[in-house]
Structure formats: structure tokens, C-alpha cells
Amino acid sequence: MSGETHIRVKDLTMAYGDFVIQRDLDFTIRRGDVFIIMGGSGCGKSTLLKHLIGLMVPAKGEIWFDDIDFWQAPPHRQEMLKRRFGVLFQSGALWSSMTLQENVALPLQEYTELSKREVNEIASLKLALVGLAGFEQFYPAEISGGMRKRASLARAIALDPEVLFFDEPSAGLDPISSQRLDELILEIRDSLGATVVVVTHELASIFTIGNDSVFLDNESRTIIARGDPKMLRDSSENIKVRAFLNRGKV
Amino acid sequence: MRERLPASDVVTKYLAEHPGIERVVFHAEGLTAWDSGLINFLRNVIALCGEQGLAVDQGGLPEGARRLLRLASAVPEQVTGRHAEPPSLLHHVGQVTLELLHGAPAMIRFIGEISLAVGRLLRGKAQFRRSDLALLVQETGPQALPIVSLISFLVGLILAYMGAVQLAQFGAQIYIADLVGIGMSREIGALMTGIILAGRTGAAFAAQLGTMQVNEEIDAYRTLGISPIDFLVLPRMLALILMAPLLTLYASVVGMAAGMLVAVTAFNVDMNEYYQQTLYALSIPHFLVGLSKGLVYGILIAIAGCLRGMQCGRSASAVGEATTSAVVTSIVFIVVSASLMTILYQKLGI
Image (tube, rainbow over all chains, first blue to last red; front, side):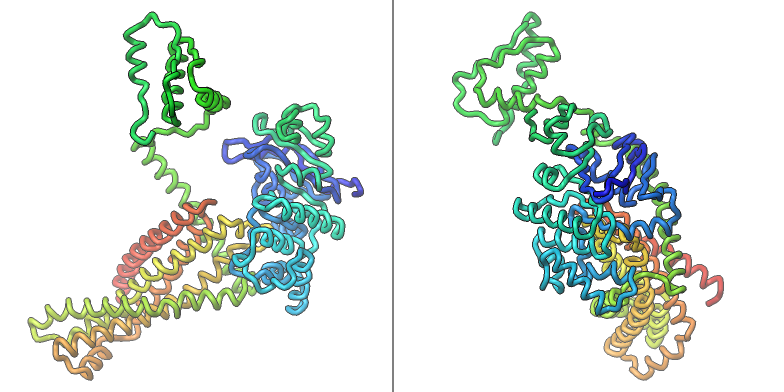
């Protein structure tokens, strides 16, 4: 964690038509951090993630990756930037018509000059890294929810991304699988040196992996707290944030 | 609650008849069992008292009922902008009009994106897996043969019978060959193939892409910088462009065979004569007209199926709606384009 700014969000306003979801969001994410976007259900956490990964256009504001303003960059530059991202969607979003190996191999086939054999080797390696060695020829429908999440993580790290985005990684997982996934996220962050952005409201995950965060409020529709989640839990001035991070006990 | 809910109308009436009441007290000492029906009744009565500024004493209610009432009123009712009443006819008409107005630019944009993807394909830069194309060709073409055979055979049979009954009055049964041959090759073969493909393949495309939308699979392509139009729409379009004319040709031949069967077995036409008459009646332009219609229907079905799939919402019911919409859109496209092409070919004398 060098402390150098990797992602900067400036005066971001997100809206569906005239309906503003969050406004005036302003925060930075340091390189190598595990940054948590948290808040109550329906506050716009996943929408913020969709803005960060280029799936939704901001109503106002800027999103910078290093010295590139994503939404001002020409389309080919945006595509290049996207290749530096790895995304794990809430549902896993594995391509159901492909085997796990094909899922992981596709980004490699599209964006590297590797031979088919090398692509398959790398895909197998990535699956092994998430504990799915031997499952290469399985289809997503043939494995459990936790395994799908891990396979999706293998696809997200296929191109050794600089930034990993996770949308509710623990959703639908039992506590043990959830804890294993948290450990995996940290291991991959350490080994790849990636910046990790996680959308979650799972307290156990927040305190295990997060070292910086923002708290989105759905009443004021903006950020009401930022900083280390443990610090916010113990000493946030905002009662709503302390209540959230202490399971309702202030 | 299993029989009927207690109504608060009695209380409303009583309060109206006795204007001097200031306080309402509940006595439920004799109550041995109750369910949500009681809570609903109490809630209505309490709301009524609130409206009339009357004090309410809940002390006589069972403890569980008091707790449930507290729970029901713990979070104040929120203004969500959703109305329980069904929208008026005028509102509905306005909404449908707006949807149509918004739908047209979306369709034009989608066709534009497909055109760009075709341009990339021609330059060899389109991103899609050749294995996907092969699989789609197989699903769209060979796997549709049984249903195309059945429908074309039966339609050929109907066409032959309908014509033969009239022609037999003049002893002109041999012209069944002309009627069926020209009818199947120019119009009916392509039309029936189009309708089968709309119900089978167009619906499948919408359901596949809609499910991918629900499962965020399409988002996953976008975040990797892979165009879903190239990767998902283009192979589906190519598969139909390749298979629709071939299926049209096949349907025409099967329909003609059915016509021959009717003429030979039911109307005593010699098989060789029928064959010769068919050859005499048909010319290459007839087949080209049919093939061109098949091609156009194929393109339109692919556009409708893929467009509705890509526009699908994020719920299971949205997939059903997308599928239905794909079939309806395809059939409307087919009928409109069939009419336009028929007029055009007549004008051109083809």
C-alpha cells in the first residue's frame, strides 16, 4: 500500500433519469487498498460500482484512473482501461454456455497473443488458484454457488488486473465459504498487488478485508462517512454509521 | 381470517351516530383466539380514531396484538410514487404511445450497432467464437427440419386440396402443379418458414439473451471490453442469414411434394405429368423471389429476437415478456415486409 491515489471520484452524481440516487460523491482510492463501499440496502452501492466499471454513465462528475478521466477518454482508451479491471458480479455472471475453462480463457484469447495451449494452461492455473483444479470442463450450472463465485473470481483475475471490483461477494454464501472468499480476495490482492473495491454490507467481510471505506446514506443521498471501517465502527461521529457497523447497537 | 375479516364500518357508523365520544377503549378479556384479521380491524379503527381526534386506550388488548400494532406503525408510511389504483385508459394510451416513441430510436440504434458489427465482420475484426456460430447454425437449421417438414407438408396439402376442388370442376387438375409450385416457391414456403423461425428461433434468441441479461452475463462482456453485439448478436444473425433461405427452399420442395401426393392419389393426375407441369410452371425467378423473402425474414427475425433479448429487464418475468415481444415483433415484421415485397416484385414484373 503505497498511499498513491489510484482511483479518484470527483463530484459524482448518479441518477436514473430525473431520480437522483447519490449526489456529490467525492473520494479517492489508494493503490493496493481494499476499499469498501457500504451502506444500507437500496442506497446505490451497486450503482456506484457500475459507474466505476463503465457500465453506467454519470449524470455529473468525473471518475479518474491514475491520470485518465474515464468518461472523457475516447472509446478505445476506455476499452483499454476496462482491460485493467477484473469484475466479480453479485450473481457470478459466468457465461452459462461455456465451461469454466472457456469462461476464464475468453479474456485471454481476446486480449493476448498466447497460443491455445498456453491460454488453456493459464486458465487452468487461475482455476487452481481459486481451488477449482479439476473442474475445468464443468459448466456453471453443474457447480455450487460458492464455486461459481470462485470461478468468477478466476475469470476476473485472468488478465492479472490492476483493479478488482467485487459486487456483494458474500451474497448467498454460507459463513465458511464467505470467509474463504475473503481470504482469497486478500491473497489475490497481495500476490497481484491489485487495488480492490468491494461493495458489501456484510460486517464480517468489511472488518476482515477492508482498510478504507465510504458509507452511502439513502436519506441524504450522499457519503456520510469515510475512513477505516474499524475506526468508523468505534468512533464515527455519525450515529447512523456506528449503528450500521455495530448491528444496530450504538 | 379464513371466513371473513371483521369490518370497521360498524365503528364508523357508531361514531357518526354518537358525536360526543372522546375516547375509544378496547375490552378483549373474553377473547380466546385471534389472528391477523383482528390486527387489521384494530389498525383501521385506530386510524379512524386518529382522523377524528379521538383518544384510543389499547390496554384491554392482548399483549401480542399490542406488539403487532406497534410493529405495524413503527416505520411511517413512505411516499413511493406508486399508486394502488389501476391507471386510467388515457394514462395507459399515453404510456403505450411514449413506449412506442422511445422504442423506435432504440431499434434504429440497435440496427446501427449491427451494421457496424457487420462492417467489422467484413474487415475481419469482429469478435466472436466460430464454434458458437457452428452451434447456432445447427440449432437454427438442421434442428428445425422436422417442424419445417411437417408444417410445409401440411400447408402444401391444404393448398393442393383447396385449388384442386375448384380446378376439378373444369377438369384442370393438372394445374394443381402450377398453383402449388408457384405458391410454395414464391410465397408460402418463405412465409411458413418465417413464422416457424419467429416462434422457434426468434423466441429462443430473446430468451437466451434475456436470461444472460438477468444473470449479468452481458454486463460481464461489456466490462471486459467485448462487444455483446459482436459476440452474441452477430453469430445469431449470421446463422439465420445462412439458414433461413435454405429452410425456405426446403419448405418449398416439401410443400410441392405434398401437392403432388394429393394430385396423384386424390385427383388421378399422373405423377410424371405433374412433375413435368411443375417444371414448366416454375422458373428460377420464382425461387429467387422466395429465397430473397426467406433471407429478409431471417434478418428481421434475428433483429427482433436479439433486440428484445438485449432490451430485457432484470427479472424472470421480463424474460417471458421479451420472448413474447420477440415473437410478436417478428411476425409483424414478416407480414409487413411480405406485403411490401409482394407489391415491389409485382411492380418490377418479377
